[in-house]
Image 1 (cartoon, rainbow, N blue to C red):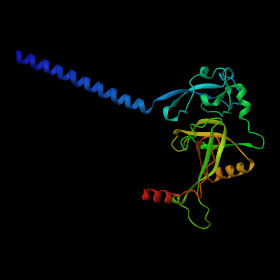
Image 2 (image 1 turned 90 degrees about the vertical axis):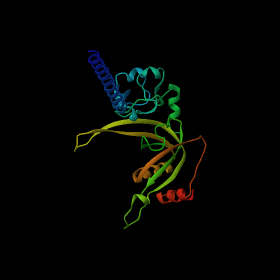
Image 3 (image 1 turned 180 degrees about the horizontal axis):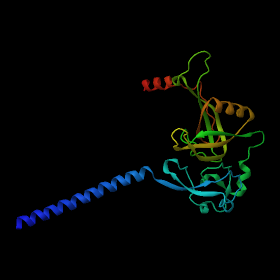
Image 4 (image 1 turned 45 degrees about the horizontal axis):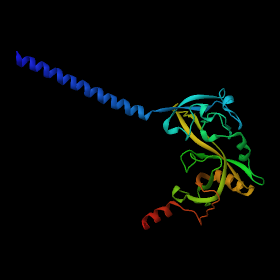
Length: 248
């Protein structure tokens, strides 16, 4: 009888331990799944919004949306209380996330207009390339372009792409981060396309180069110190990068 009771007790203990292990494993799996799909509540523009808008006026023009953490813009706002007393310093497109860097004191708005003799040009830059996520009104940036060389009658491969610094010490007037949803016609799946619209202050001649570069390839921004000017001789290709690595 004692042996039977001991067997029953050991069986119950084993069952309890097994149940605890299953619960622990399930909790771990759930935690991993949750981490992969974690979302953050972010204020998103429900329509195009002009600079100068106050937090009070934005209440009816914005809504809270759950955005996957990896797509949340730096300084994204979950409520308008953090920018009370400030005004919107940059234009927002429909679907844009509201960030703290898009707001400034009312008296500072006029300083974000291009200076005499300069023009303001808007360029589209991916959220990840360069430091587009961290650029803010008043930042100084260098602009790089990666493009395919123009060779008539020959096939061009990505290995021949060249990256070149072509503008330096450019002042950022405004930055708007948008997370536009696009739907794949074949699969019906919806994906997030994160892009930054950066408004840069340039001379008319620089504007021509900037607009042309944006049609030829991909633009990258690099934040610099105010007043610094940088130059590079010829740019680099993938072969140059490989050769430099071999030398090191």
